[in-house]
Length: 227
Image 1 (cartoon, helix red, strand yellow):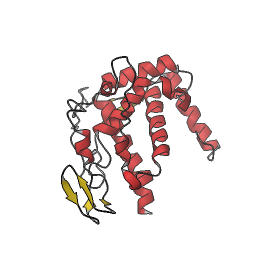
Image 2: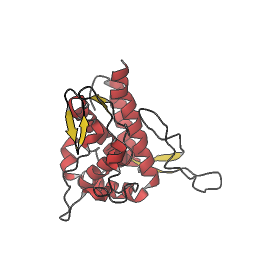
Image 3: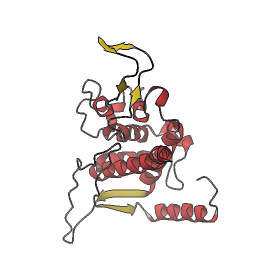
Image 4: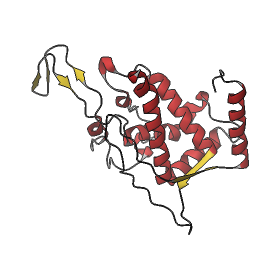
């Protein structure tokens, strides 16, 4: 049960929080993704999986959320099933190996300015996406996440739907001043998630509000239907 929870609930919760934090901190990236959705999808419906190949910036933003704040920064322990050697280091059979996912996401040769949230890093010169799908965020080898394909689709759909319908900004105090958010305030543990922060989440338009209400009503009246 713990495996199911961490694999299907905790990871989704952390990823959603990371996404909301990134959008509150980086309005320019949010606005560019929204403009792409408006151009490709329009405002009369929510994005679907059929739209994914055409939403290149949304895809880059999705990848950057996964890289910028990995859910499992220290990965999960593995054990070698035979003697091995890596870059001159002898690793005997039965050795516990812990992959440093955080270090992978901070490799400056691959990700210049790694602490900066920058979806554009996944584009190449001709405006298409590179082949870095940040699959290390789902683990490695025989212990790679068995639900990664479902998680990939679910997270992408969540992000694109939220971007299509909501504006996420910093909250304001009683005087109308923005309340700062500490981007580095994260918990310690197997998973790392942002500590509570204040933000403002508002529908982008009356049409977006109607879309939200229609989807909610459909889900309530058809609880077994997959939306």
